[in-house]
Image (cartoon, rainbow, N blue to C red; front, top):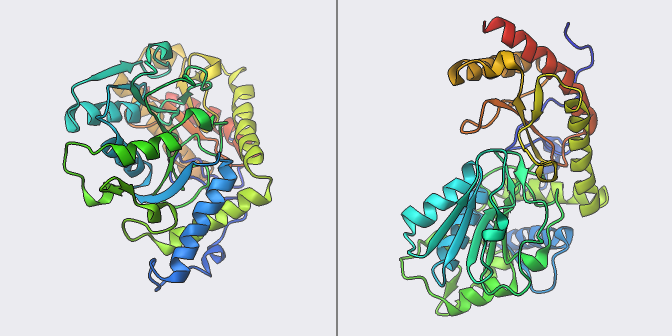
Length: 384
């Protein structure tokens, strides 16, 4: 039987993610459309985003924030191309994007002193293998696996290398230990529910020092240039973007930041994400067919909540048949208008992924789970 209660907002995509509760296009009515981003009002708007972001993240003194092109991916690439190569680097991968960073470091930057530590979907590599004397690149939260590092205890306070964390689905939802993070990247489109294409680059004092004292051996694309002649481009951290940003997206980001401030700031956004995970955990504890993809409870993400199917009637099927069941179930949910974009990431094991970031209401998470039970059972029967 179909459930009777429907989510009020059926948006569970992992990017772009659900808008903040109560959002409408009226939030964009004051956007500086038709104005240059380099005009005084344009730079002021961009600098306001930077200032509010720094405050909301509770960054220590000396950590700087810039708006960069290419969403989180662009921010990660800027960091790697600008900072790596000064010493050996360890790169961690346990899902799609972490594996992409390994590929870029090894095959694109072609660094000679690289160690890669990997783990299958659902697990973490042994973090104790990371050397404090080497740079390290890693995802704080694996968006496509639902596996996050549980804390920063494995990062040495006496390290000489830089820590570069892809924090796109962790920032503003997880407690990030900033003194241990030299570079962090994320985008507006995740926990803030903003629009895509723009990235946020957070750099600590040690990363800024590397920019000032190290020049990579390779040509630097214009979009990646953060320093010239040993001098950091201060304007990047004051609203002077390298390329042309969307002032509509900027206004939308400001709206999301104000919303986060109004509900109580970082503690509130983290609490909303934890409540969403708790709703799924209560359901999964009694499910006969689904479980978290993460094998260690301490590593389960509260944003990209990834589920695997443990039902023998499903696991006995070949991968193509499994994928067909997931596709059919996701299609049923979309047709009913109760949940959009619930299938797992294309490179991940067949399953479901529910976004649990701060802009999603726990009540909608609780309401969609009986629908997921219904859709899975119906799809399994249909795909016999």
